[in-house]
Image (cartoon, rainbow, N blue to C red):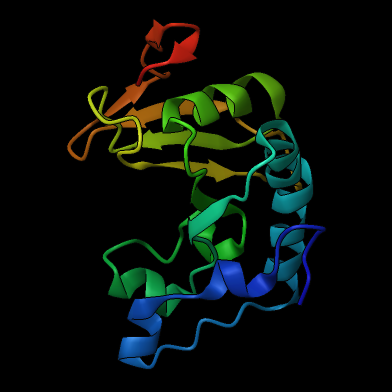
Length: 161
């Protein structure tokens, strides 16, 4: 099922854990609508900006799958409102800053970021059509959350990390 021009539902529902454990990871109509909103409001503009495919590392998670991976059934992933992503060749911090400055979003988290490895970690992004988006921006190092994003470092006109 095509959610938007560049995104298919299967990109958001694939899960090795679900396959291995026999967990049904099929979203309902409401979750699919939320995924469409996420695509149109954030992911399509992001893809247009960088003109590169976006890899969805985690999208929709059924409550059972969410609990199986140690997350909560109340996660925005379970509502089809969130996605974890990366863009090959673009530092995650640069992706996060672009979303922060150009999109309406509920929560943006730069997860497991390392200034020494621009490809480390991923960007978590969520969008909520049904209310005011919080515009919450966090960085998570695996132990604690900090408000906002770290400063970007530049070298020769490019983001270094």
